[in-house]
Image (cartoon, rainbow, N blue to C red; front, side, top):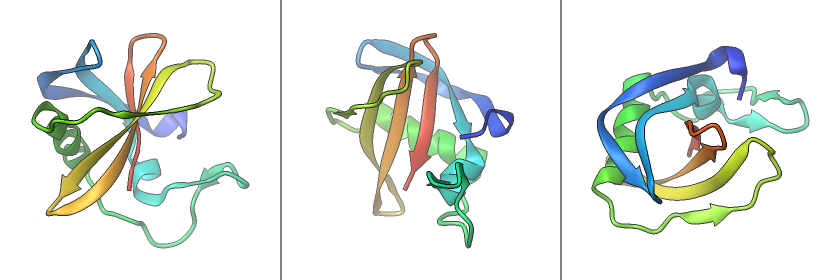
Amino acid sequence: MKKENTVNRKLRIPILISGRLVRDIWFDLKHIQYGWDKKRRDYNIGPARNSYSEEDVIMIFEQLKHLEQDPRIQLTNLKDVEKRMIFYVYDEGKKLKMVVDFMKNSSTVVVTIH
């Protein structure tokens, strides 16, 4: 994710996740669309893996209000991340993995959806 491309958007409905009330989310739409090349430390080159809009990301995240699931915890070495969780969400019947970080500063970041 690149700080200059990260946006903060309000949810239409607050969602309680693991004891945290989420009212807004942060995300980098280009990171969600293209993914991340760890070696180059930049977005992947090539065609986008999806064409999600900001509104799509919000709607996909808001599914968590209605889906019964226990998020899978993923280990991370990022010092600002309190907890990284993996959720399974759906787009037109297609099962997707959504990675969400609960930050130590109480913000919630959608890292990627694929």
